[in-house]
Structure formats: structure tokens, C-alpha cells
Length: 262
Image (tube, rainbow, N blue to C red):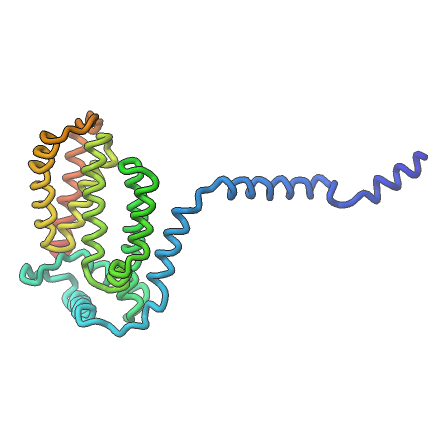
């Protein structure tokens, strides 16, 4: 009987070996991890990526894209972007285009790729509004932005508008977050959003003016119909934090508008 038992042990299936058991535990761990993952935001982002990269080079360059490409040639020729206030465009977009042209060559994909990535980043940024407006609202808004024909069009188009969309969204996120939570990260959102808007187009002044005009409009609205718990949150950042945000923003503006000090 002992011999038979020993023979049975030797002929036991490989599944009972410690190595195979370890593999099964490893696979089970990843299965549980994937099962517990919220895939809806990733699906929305994936849809945004697909719609923006699909046949990206199919459409011939637009006149505005050609002009922007010419500006990049001038940056290469002069060594810096020569800012012209009558052009109504800031320097950031041109320096990013120059970087992508150096990395990927002088072609239509390199010209449009930065805006494609910024457009996808805009969709991702909408999810950051979840603590402010709720999960369902933020996801519906992100989905709408991901599939919006207008935004998909501009998200595949090498001009400044999507940059302004990104930074204005960041600016509003920061202001609302400071009102509701008062945390430092929202101060950075507001500060860098405003900085990016200034570096993108002079029309940032219109957005800032609208934000300022919203203050008395909000006061009147609150006086007519009071909302519970509408008072601003206690701010947890310090004056040093504010000085840091202002310093970084001012340094970026001076650096790019000065032609990178050249």
C-alpha cells in the first residue's frame, strides 16, 4: 500500500505543484483588481483618443495651419518666436509645435499632434470636476466633450483654440475648487490656468472679464435666491503659496513672451 501511495503522489497533476498554485493566485489577484476597476472614465478617454487619432492626416492642411507652420519656420530662422501683438496669438503654441517638429519631423502629424493631445487632456480634466458637480454630471460632460463634432474637429486642427479651452477649464476648476474646498491644489489650477490663457491668446482678457463680471452677478443671484452652504470654504493655503504660484506664472509669461530671453 505504501508503494501505491508513493506512486500516486508522483503521478499527481502538475496543477497541485506550488509553482502552479502561485500562478493561479497571481492571476486571481489581477482578475479581482480588474473586476474592481471603474472602467467608465477609461472608456470615455479611449473614445476621445480614437476619434482624434482616426485618419488624422486625411484632411489637407487648413490656411490657419499653414500660417502656424510658417511661424515655426520663422522660429527656426530667428531662433525665437518674435511676438507681434497685432497677431493676437501668444507664443506657447508655437514653441510646442517647434518641439514636436524637432521630435517627429516636418509633417502634418507633427503639426496636429500637440493639439490632439491637449484635446484629450481637456476631456480628462472634466473628470476633475467630480467633487464639485458629482460623478454623473462630470462623466456626462466628459462624454459629451469626447464625442462633440465641434470639439473633435478643433481637437484635430493645429490652432490655438483648444489650448485656450484647456487653460480656461483649468482656471474655472481652480476658482470653483477654491470656493468649495479652499485647498492649495486648486490655487495652482487657477494660477496655471490663467498663466496658460495669457500665453495662448490675447482673448484671455475676455474670459477674465467674464469671470470678474460673474462676481456681482453671483451676489445678486444669491441675494434673490439663497442657496444653503453657499459660503466660501476656509482657505488652507498661505501667502507664501500664493507668492509661489504668482512667481511661477510670471516667470513663464516673461520667459515665453521675451523670446526665451533671446
